[in-house]
Length: 153
Length: 104
Image (cartoon, rainbow over all chains, first blue to last red; front, side, top):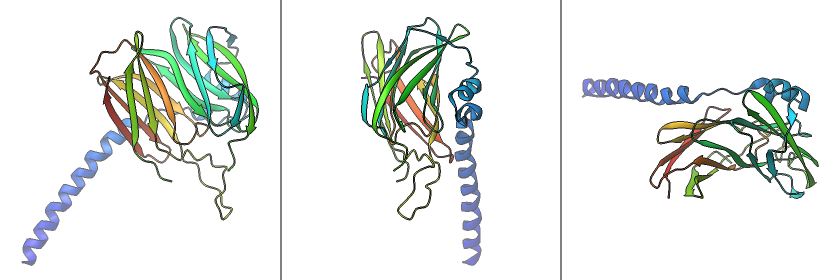
């Protein structure tokens, strides 16, 4: 009886180890990159440096849709479209947040340079969008007035 | 609140397919204090990946500045009815979730 139990334990042990190994694999594969320098930057200038986007030219071809006045800074809808030909990436920054960078989106073959997301805004500030197209960087801003900040709680 | 399931809808527009995805995640900024005055540690989604029929078409890096329970819209060129869209995320604690849907 105890012999059977031991065998059972050994077998399930091997099975469990196999399962864990199997589960860990896709997790490792998922561990994609995350730009620590850009996301950890506390100023817009440092963020742009971290993104490698210093000296980006202002462009009217980047369309930012966001409310002029946001009552709730915790959820501010932002819609970005880049009409620059060959846009490969778009980054969204909230200029006066403790950490300005909200996200960077890389578009591969098949995706359109468009993204819509909700961001938190601590106070009234400019939303800045940086777009990469044809090896160059472009930028545009739009001011959003915030009635209630969305960083504290 | 813990991280939870996702919901997704992919619908055809004029020449593109609109992917709308809702993720359940607290997106803690690391600045908020709980009822006892202790700071709630950073907990946010860092990476989002969108696949079309198994091929990666969009990769995103995100920060804690994205709102709680994030909603994203993405667009892919063309897209036919039945095309398989897969969206997954990974947060700073190593948790991840993915969801799959066909273009309607």
